[in-house]
Image (cartoon, rainbow, N blue to C red; front, side):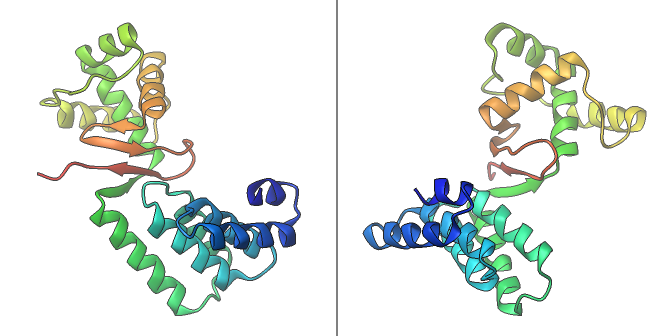
Length: 194
């Protein structure tokens, strides 16, 4: 309900519903995230940051609240140092959970490399998804060639777009599960530890 009220620009009501939802169940990360959205729209930026942080702590794999926090911090440079400290602690938490950031350009470059690994492209064409494992022995050489010939932020060929779409659909990149947002925003990627 809080989400819907925020979408309708009824932020005062959204705040009330989110607070009620949290009283009923304090484990509902979306209630904290939507409360943050309402408070941010009401100009209560420091408290909004705290709500985004709580949502991130409750569900680190859903990075939308953290993304809201970062946008809030970018838009309001006058927030207290404590908010920056919270952000740093959340980055540590996300890293401890095996999540790191890659840019959309890095994800596109990864798709370009995967498309040149014939077995990956053929598997995606046949099955509509990435294979469970990817033999990436030549990946660093292919990546170097792609970047040298096409630059760091590449336009994808149709084959590369097919692989990229599979990556987004599945939320996976080499080495683990990825939380992918749209191509213009940073992408959260989970990695396997050795």
